Every structure is written in C-alpha cells, then in structure tokens.
Image (tube, rainbow, N blue to C red; front, side, top):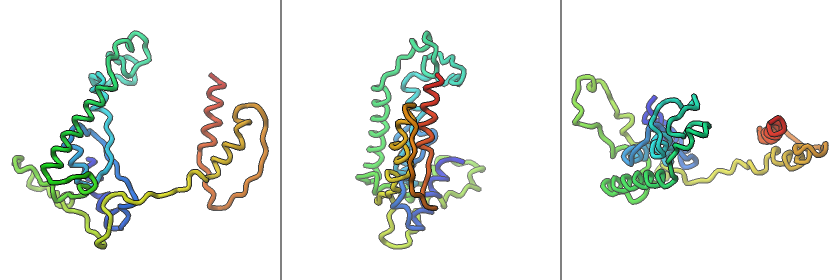
Length: 219
C-alpha cells in the first residue's frame, strides 16, 4: 500500500477522534525530495524517514548485494579490501538533507505557510495533476485523500501538542536491572523481593542485559 493512502487515513482518523494532538505521525518510503516531504506534511505527517537517498549520497550504487558481503563500494560489507573503497562522508548526507529542506522551504513559501505545524493535514492544498490525461485515470477518485479531516470541535488539534508520559522510567525493569547488576556482571548471586500487581509491566530490558552479557561471555 502506498504510504500516501495509509498516512491520510491515519491522520484523518486520529483527528476525527480528537487523538491527533497526542500522536506524532512519521512516514517513510521512497522519500527523495522536498516535494515528497511537502506532500507528506499536507497529508498529515510531521516526521519523515530517509534511507535509500542518503545511502546513495554516501556512494551506494544499488547493486542489490547488501546481504552477500560483496558490496563493490564498501558500504554493506565486512571485507577489508572492499571497505577501502568507501568514500562516503557525513557531509554528503548533511548537504543532501539541507537541499531537501531548502526545496521544502520554497514550496512552503509558495503555498503561504510559515511553519510545518500549520501546514500539517492541509490536504485541500493538493490536487490531481491535470497534465496526466489517460483513460485509466477516469476511474480513480482521490477525494478521500484530498479532503481535510473533519474536526469534532473547533479546538481539535491537527498535530502533536501533548506529551504523553508512559512512566517507563518507573517500570519494574529498571529496578530489576539496578538490583541485579552484580549478578548480570557475573560477580554475585542476588535475591530480592518486589511487590507486583496485575498492572505491573514487565518488558524485555532486563532480559536484554542478561542475554547481551551471555553473548559477550560466549564470544
């Protein structure tokens, strides 16, 4: 499914249920230009993920051999001789993203927006490309994508304004890690009691610390 469809539906659903102000929406998938970002913002996104394009700025030539350890430009390989061919620099990615941002600024100025926040979800600023005139297009209806989300009331947020505290810092895992650090390090056995309820959340952080220690010991 194209990210445009999922993004528009997600944003509209959150707005209609007055939940959009609590959520940051991120989208990614073949984003290359400032125009791509502008379309994403107008459809409801606030954050964007770039992967392939920055990789190309580092020298990737799309050989599709990332899993074979034979990357000819030294990016996706552990071969010492091939890695000598890597010529990428952080500045290459920085320059690319600056150009993306500059193109986005120009589009925002053209549309009359000063900030990203006021631009989020303004899907009515988009329209179908009239230059594309083909009989297959006659059955395509993009009204659902190009219509701004319906607000249940005037003060409904259209972008993230509220920070949610999931209280992760106070979860049991952090206590277990602190109390078990000697045992995890392999020094001493530990024993302690903790009070738990049916609302106590046990995640995998403590297990991760233990398994990481085991991997180090094995290798």
